[in-house]
Amino acid sequence: MSQRIKKARRRHLIELFSVMAIYVAAVFVASSLAKVLDKGPLLAIAALIPALAIAGACYVSFRFYQRMDERQQRIQANAAALTLTVAIVIASTLGFLKTYGVFSFEDDFIWFTPFLIITWGLARRLMGDDC
Amino acid sequence: MIVEMENRLKELRAERKWSQGDLAEKLDVSRQTVNSIERGKYDPSLPLAFKIAEVFGQPIEAIFQPNGDEQS
Image (tube, rainbow over all chains, first blue to last red; front, side, top):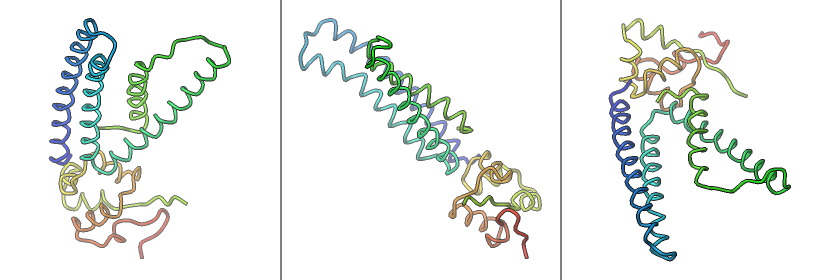
């Protein structure tokens, strides 16, 4: 493997762990603030703090994607396309099941991100990810 | 129509006693990418194909041929 790609992978792991540590801290801070703040702009800002950390994680991942070689980038792009397809099918299916009263469940968007991350991970493995 | 390519990467690499890792370093790609190209699992882009030709000091068509084509 080229030294540049090895360094990029090492840097990515450090950056990812750092931003995930920030995310954990952000969730803790937001949860603490949510207990004491009334509904309003300040509560909205507190709710956005973890989302900013997630945005940081996405930025770190995209930067790593840009440093990959062309084959690795193709694998990631194919996996992203497959993930989007699966997400569309599942979201639509659940939507129609709920709309027609087949199932009754709460829409909770907080689970959508972990679902996408897991699906993307599986799609990457399926596409032959070796990053 | 997707045309699969045959290549002489493994043969040219062996002539120079390079490992896949050595070639990957010269091409600035991962070893797995070199392996995939040699096994015909991945066709390189044009810039990468030119880089491969430059590294081996041969024209592209001497290294890559469409599947089933014989080099004249």
